[in-house]
Length: 425
Image (cartoon, rainbow, N blue to C red; front, side, top):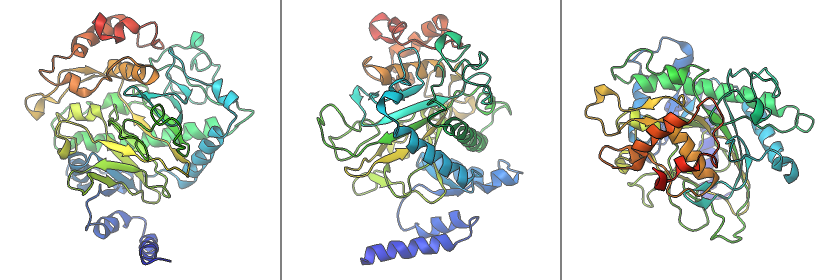
């Protein structure tokens, strides 16, 4: 064993010996010699009595302002559930291609399987499966139940993102119940973080974050990703593109669109990096801690906070990050995107001074992002389009969108093409 490997092995042994509750503090001390997003203990959220003066509130605020990324431990999600979810995820992507093709997402439904997603007009090197909240969000109802409408679009009663497509129960009987249990657990983590992120000494009404905290309102979804080993075939067409990069051409970068993202990283694959202009190469690896979740700030939180929540190195940009793909090892990830209600008008809090952004309606932003994922509709929408004085066509186009689109129906990208292209604005 090399000296470096021996050192890493020794460090891992020491960390494993630290009590679970004290691990976050230990890791901060242990890694203080290098800049890195912090590890935060969430046990106060479960212990109760959290207030605006709680050290946890300040820790979360500092992490959101300085990095836009942090890891959380003692979050309350059972390790057995995480293991079962990972097992089901691997089993799903091992299904025959013809089975997954039957679950392919379409222009009128953003939910389902895909292997052709575009990010800033470049195709990603991955497979994915998206599923999420459906009115009335009663997971006990069968897919065919009209109250859920998760069987086909004709029976679907209402959500812009569409209806869920799960693998056949006779092939993966444990997939749906396991994944929906996992979804609810991650929603609990995100909801727990929403209040401390929302407090932070900022004056706001007590029910301000109700669109996020009410289970019937937030429009979150869970994305299962599978990154096959990169073969180098036709790298001009297939690559891990914006916010995903590896042994390939230089990427452009993307930020997560919603309020926050909860990610369980693969401990054996240090693949996530965050921009840090003080680092020698401009990037810092977010090294996953055992049993931890990685949290990052999204675009909507940046607008609400009037640019307070962002990595300071990026000025008005949310945290830039990229994901490395191995040429020899497959990688799996499952980010949970915690999003507001479609009708939520996201704008800076009045108590934070002169606003840097105009109002941004989440349903419009989400629909435009899905359109860009599904097909090439030109330059991808960004929150910079809503910056004061930007003159972007999106500011006026979203009013037209709100007047013409039914948020209680599945959004059809092709049918709504006139609303998605600048020439018609």
